[in-house]
Amino acid sequence: MAIQVETFYIGEREFTRTYSDANRYVVRDGVSYSEACDPAEFGRTYTEGDIMEDDASTEAEDEYAQAGRILMGVEE
Image (cartoon, rainbow, N blue to C red; front, side, top):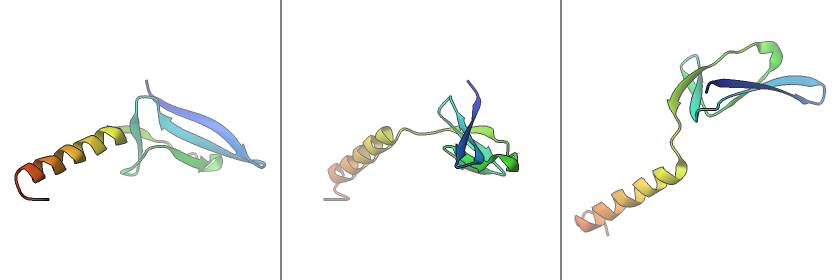
């Protein structure tokens, strides 16, 4: 599992799509992206970063936190 780079065209202009097949962010210059699409002539390279959290698990964690605040009387 690693960084994947795909080439695609919009009209006659060539672009690259860079992403991780390991559900990780791709990182360039300290900035993390879920995927990156760049004009091919830029020649940008990326490294793998942190694992991306699943939105569903983040939502469930938020719901548990809210339930805990309600049970503790902090929130109604």
